[in-house]
Amino acid sequence: MCKDYFIERDGERFAGHHLLIDFWDATNLDDPAAIDATLCEAAVTAGATILHSHFHHFTPNAGVSGVIVLAESHISIHTWPERNFAAVDVFMCGACDPNLTIPVMQRLFQAGRVVSEEVRRGREPIASAG
Image 1 (spheres, rainbow, N blue to C red):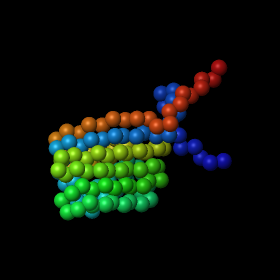
Image 2: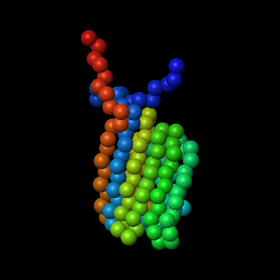
Image 3: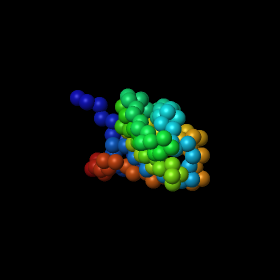
């Protein structure tokens, strides 16, 4: 039988936490190597296991898109340097804490405003014993 990595909390069972993070008035948005290193550091800080990373720089001084594939899911990013904006998704299951990724990323991006929304993916109520 396969191990079940779903989380049980607050009367629910769910696959994991998915953070949608917007970094506004941000810097360092056009350096794929720095973004890769920072997102890898963020993943490890959150307790995740890195499997692979891939980043694409569209043109010099233009946006970066990339993904860190994790054993526990993924971190993805898309940046718009011309708007000083980055959109980051952090989806993690098991014992990982995706909220720990935000301060690590903020050190690089130095955003004037960070907006984060959390979604529990694969939610279902836990049937009470009765």
